[in-house]
Length: 193
Image 1 (tube, rainbow, N blue to C red):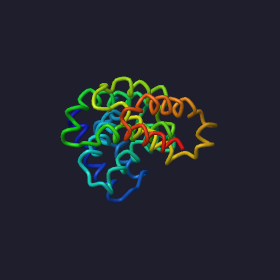
Image 2: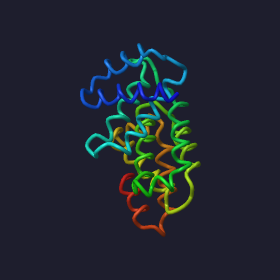
Image 3: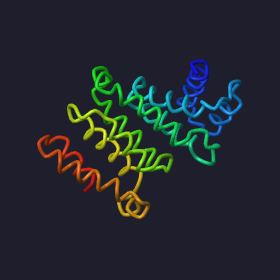
């Protein structure tokens, strides 16, 4: 898996510079080690790059992962791949926040983008959210990041038509529960409105 991950990192770095999803898919599909772990390796690299890239490049690996989950690019990444990687990341979230204070929001944003694009379901999002430790407002901030991504990607009316109603309901419920933490509650409500 480590060798595969290194191959994906090399190709992903090139994608970040050139932004050619077809070339990215082509290079990964002709990889010398086309294993059953390719999707998980892509998701792992995309999530890890989120924490190591500059702010203006931070969304590019996630965009690549989501494009590689589409039929157009061979469905190289599955929802199960994304969820497996995210569950591993949220298990160490409290420690991760020492180096990246917005880690919970960024991880929520990745899952929100996956939901908005159809690469993952609301049920997948909620499964990852339920694994986030209930310390220091992390579940609320994860949800806030997810909701921010969804609202950027999908018009509110279209989102409700696309089945995102339960996602928005969960956000409203969480915002109400977070009334003691004004920053989180008001950020969530601002995203919903």
